[in-house]
Amino acid sequence: LERAYVLDREGRPESEVPLLALLSKPMQRELRFARYEGCLREIGFSRYLSQCGHGPAELLALRHLASHAISQSTLAAKDAVFEAGSVAHEAHWLAQGSFEYVLNMSQRVGHQRWVSEMTLWTPWLHLGDLTTREDCSVVRLSAKNFSDCMRRWWNLFEMAQAYAREYVKSMSSFAAVTDLWQGVVVADEHRPSLRSSGSFQEVL
Image 1: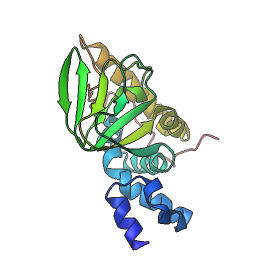
Image 2: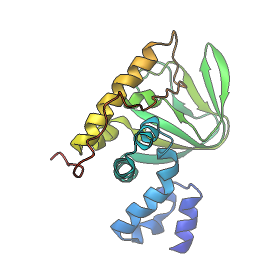
Image 3: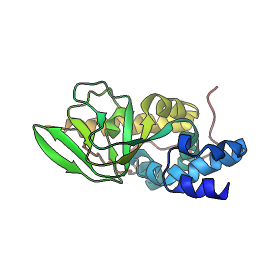
């Protein structure tokens, strides 16, 4: 199991580490959270919750996302991550390797960043092609499962709605937005926040 944990921390897909199935369900959830916490905290909404002083809400959401909305795969060189004109269903964390994005012209894209994050907040068609330049590891965050997670807790859902409005408003202020666009919504006292009294209410 220790060897399985090491392989998991190296970024291997779970299908390549079958010993992980021997762990208890709670231990598997903790392992998945430890594995994906870093990239999930890079999502704009996670930073937004932190800025608003809602650390408990952020942690609650990240733990659920790690267990229910994340998948990871290893791609060979020249494989397609997504193609222009296809409906976007996932945001992509480029975990390892080097990528190429083509929209009118070719652009090299490094790893350790999110791509097509807007898929989480608005319907989106991919505008360009993203392919791998070498063997790469990609983490996918399902937009549907992300939305389902936000709806589990009413207070968190209210915050997500407020963030989505500001995010789309920011997108609309740009003359052109590509799959690589990364918006920043800054929290301030004028934007709605989670009610601070009471615990987070789960919507059944």
